[in-house]
Length: 182
Image 1 (cartoon, helix red, strand yellow):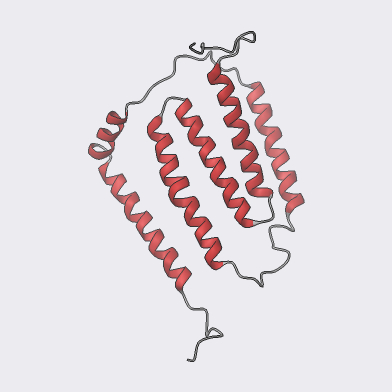
Image 2 (cartoon, helix red, strand yellow):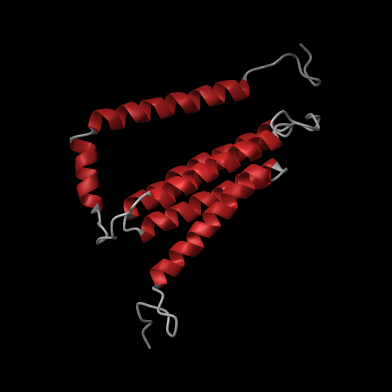
């Protein structure tokens, strides 16, 4: 028995329900990423946030951006962040970090920004929704490797330089260690 376009008895479209679920997951995990005390849990919440955003991209008809979100942000950046945290985290870290003392200021700033955005969204007259645009992966790849090949290569060089710099900073000696004889 095939599933229809909308939920029976309610009349809400399935893609609208999926969008609301993905958006709520995105907002919840993003909020957890900035409010949790354990930095590893923050990194995992960031991965859930990126995955929800990839789902929204796929739902909106852009599988290339969704795949890029999964590969680049979840597969590379989030794993790199978690790896760096696990490698560099020290046992004798300060009990209260600087950003934890500014929580009230950040909460007030976030509330003000949320109010401004809400007022702007409510005051704007939005046009009626049209048809979704579906992008072809072949068209995007052709444009990327023909018309935009120079910016693509510049970004790849910058990302390589960032990785080399991160490795250099992570491996830099800060002085003699306990087990060293020198």
